[in-house]
Amino acid sequence: MIYSDNEIIQAIKEQKDNKVLDALYQSILPKVKRYICSNSGNEEEAFDIFQDAVLILYKQVALNKFNTQFKIENFLFSVSKNLWINYVKRKQRMVSTDFNEFDKETPENILNEILSSEKMSLAQKAFHQLDEKCRDILNYAIYQELTMEDICIRMNISSVNAAKMQNYRCKKKLADLIKKNKTLFDVLK
Image (tube, rainbow, N blue to C red; front, side, top):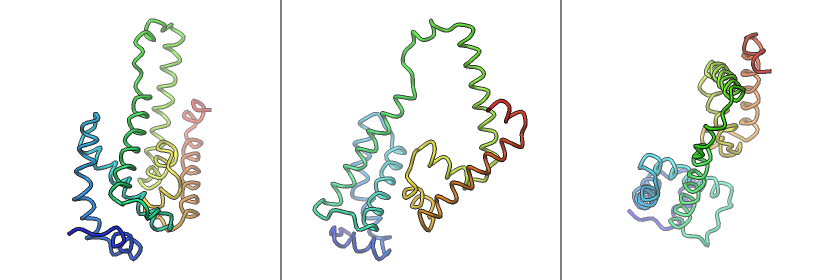
């Protein structure tokens, strides 16, 4: 079934959006998949990107910030496209293509690299001692640099203040884990 933009917005506001959500996925997701798959992505990445775009739409509607001059289909496709472009840029930054760097390696650089790698490994061990919810919150806040509003939506947290408090508690738990492990604390300080 095809819904008008007004029906979609109303369904989201009233939280009666299951059928509307299905319709959005059926009508718009294939276009997003085609775009992402033709631009060095895959279907799984397209699905993730589209989910993020839908969350942004929900947030805009819930906060009464959605500009009704835009068609929802165009909005979701544009947001998906921009999210994909940003994702690809971040991914390219993480992969170094400068093979001449290997020629510049000295024993000091190699030693620093090993120490840095060891620190990262120890920090990850402490991170994985946290419960899943804390790992997710810290991952979203630190590595993915999401706003507290986005974290609220993704993790179904009641308010921004609640998300901030949980983020603070998780950071404190991680710091306590590091302090308890003297070897880890000494290496990371």
